[in-house]
Image (cartoon, rainbow, N blue to C red; front, side):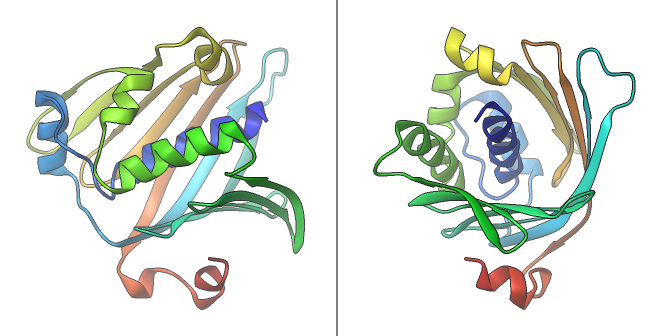
Length: 204
């Protein structure tokens, strides 16, 4: 669950590119920089440095964010797996097999995650700021933000997140309380209906 939570909060950071709300001077500046497409897809390259291991774990794949529907996070290498978030559930798939399904009506964690996710999708950063201390800088062409969990339990699970970008998120770093570190680079960003494949659209 801890690994899934890390992936989910990365996805919520990506969703900032879809509809950020102006709840402070900082987010107002970011709002003026960010693009707000209804459909956003692209490539991610992720490295995770585990404590005690010399060589980081590397993976890559595609992600898609559809306003009003949810988020698709597809790892293609080294092993295919998919994380799909909608308003009602979180589904983790390995190939064509469902490895985990969490129902929002039964799992409090899912309700919390989906609440934050869809608050971001609707342009309400109030929920995010209730969970994290938000700090950073922004100018006309770029921005940097750090998110530090307010609650000890959340800080233990997710640690601290920093991200930067311009019209879209470019880089995300997660420093977990355990000492593990994750870095993600986003590229090949495309927007609009042609950005998502028929296969990906069918997953929703």
